[in-house]
Length: 631
Ligand code: AMP
Image (cartoon, rainbow, N blue to C red):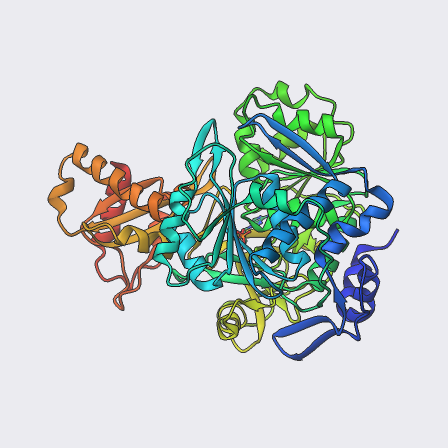
C-alpha cells in the first residue's frame, strides 16, 4: 500500500503527474492538453482543452455494466414513498427532464434555479441541467422568499424548477407562495417556472409562466437528449453560501475538475465501490448534497439514497433499517444528527444488520469527542470526521484510508488531503507557523486542487478580494477557520475567524440575519452572534436595541416582540436562520470606531472572558448583554 505522506507530497510536487492519474477515473470526450493552467493566479483552469460531461460520467457511462442496478433510491418517510431507479431508468428520467428544459428554451450556459424538496425529480433536474450544459443553482428548500430572491437576482435563471411543497415531521411546507413572492421581489424574472405537483399544497399556477411537469413529461417519454460535451472549465453549477456581508456568494464550480475530484475522493477517502450503496443524509440544497448525494456516488457507479424525512421518524431506527435493506457500505451525516440520535434509545442502532457498512463519515461542523465515541461505540463502526467547505466541494482534511489506513484522533478531522497544500498562518504577520500545536489561520497555497470553486459567480474581483487577499503579504486561499496541527500532522479546527456561524452544520452569515431583523419596524440596531449549543453545535442569538423600548417593558411584551422578530426572519430567510433568542438591550458593545464587538458578546454568552476591552466605547454595554442573558 502507498505511504500517505508520499502520496500527499507527490500531489503537490508532481501536481500534473498526480492529477493525470486521477483524471483516468472519468470518461473524456476530448483529452485535455494541459493539466493545470495557473498562469493567472489565483484563477486555475484544470484539464484545459478537454471536453467531458458530468451527467455522462454520473449516468450514461454506467449503462454498459450496470444498467439494471440501483442508481437512485428515493425514500420519503413523510409521504411513505419508496422508489428505486436503476441506471437505465434514471437515464430515461434525466433525458425527459432535459427534453422539457430544452422545450422551455434552456440552452448551454443558461441558468436553471432548482428550489425543491428532497424528491427524485430534484435529482433528475440537476442531472438534466449538466447534461445539456445548463448551469444549475439549487436553493435549499428551507430558505424563504428574501433568500431566494437574492439568488434569483444574482443567478438570473431562465427557468425555475420547483414543487408544490416539502414535508417535515409530518407537516406540509408549501413552497409556491414563497417562490411567487421571491420572483416578485427580484428584478429578474424567469421566463418559465416548471412545477412538480406532489398533491400536497396549492399550486396557484401563473398563466403563461407556470408549466406542469407531469403534463410536459408525458409528451417526451421517449425523447433522446444526448449529452452536450462541454469544455473542462464550463461551469456545472452555482451554489450560494453565506459570508461576512449580507449578499450571498455564488460558488461557481467547473465541470472536469469537479468530476475528477469527486471520482478520486470516492476511491481514496470514502472507499465506496461500484455496485454498492451510499447514503448521505444531507440535503441537495447544501454542498454535501451536490457532491455526495448526487454526483460522487453516481460517478462511482454506486446507488445513492435520497431521504426525505427526520432521522427519528417513524423511529430512531429508520436510517439503520435503510442501511440493512439497501446494504449501504458508506454513510455520510453531520455531528448534529448524531447528537439527535444520542438522545434516543441506543437499541435502535443495533437492531439492524449493519454488516455492509464500512464507516460513518461526519462533516460540516466540529465533531465533539463524546458524540464521536458514543456513535462509534454504538454502531461499532469507524467514525471519520472530515473537514471542508462549500467552496472546496470535497474534503480539505480527512483520513484517506483508501490510500493508507491510519488511525483517527478524537476531535481531529485528520490530515491535509492530497492536492491541498495546507498551511497554518500567523494572522498578523502572514508567516507560516511550523511549530506543532500553535494556533493559526488555515490557508491553502494556490492553485486549489480540481473541484474547488473557480470564482464567485459574475464577480471575479470578489473572489480575489474575499478569498485570496486576507493573508498579509501573500496570495493564499483563506478558509477563515482557525486551526492547530499536532506533531503527527493531524489538524484540529478551532472555529471561524469571521462572522460566519454554523448551526447544525449549516453555514449562516450573522450579517444576513442582522439585516433581516433590522427590517422589523421597532429595531434600531442589532448584533447577531453564534453561541455554543449542546445539540446544534451553535445557535444564533440576537441582541437588539429598540426604537421604542416601551414595547418590551414587561416580560410578556418582550416575549411577544421576540416572537414577532423571529417571524420576520422566518418569512424572509427561513426557519433555519431563526435566532434561538432575541434579547433587548439599550446599547450594543462597540469599539470607539463603531465596530460591533461580536466576539466579546459571544464570549460573554458562553461564560468566557471577553478579552481585551480597552478600545470599547461604553463598558456598561457588555454588562447589559450579560444581564440580558442571565434574565
Ligand atoms: P459550509 O460551507 O456550509 O459547509 O461550512 C464550512 C465551514 O463549516 C468550515 O469553514 C468550518 O468552519 C465548518 N466545518 C466543516 N466541516 C468541519 C469539521 N469537520 N470540523 C469542524 N468544522 C467544520
